[in-house]
Image: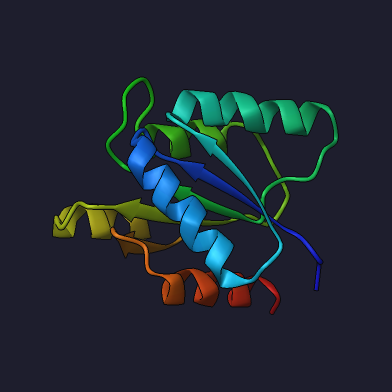
Length: 132
């Protein structure tokens, strides 16, 4: 297993980002966490990694409701990047709408839907699944 896991969190809520960062620290994993506050910033970040031949995050947590580019729009833009790296993406949302959960299933890049708040056990489960 890779000694370090690269995690990208796309969420416009600074408090959520802070909480996720604290949970990440408690998992005991060696995590390089990058946070972007909207989908557009995340696309620019991933484009830059791609152009520079840098390693992509193995895990991406995506909020749905954000300004500029929301979670769904991020996924549409991501698909146009033509990235071949295996990236595990999860929608992370406070939305309880069944149609959001169903919509997440229509994206090949999305592995699942996680309701906020993110728990330490769920995060450890995600990290563990990366090493398989």
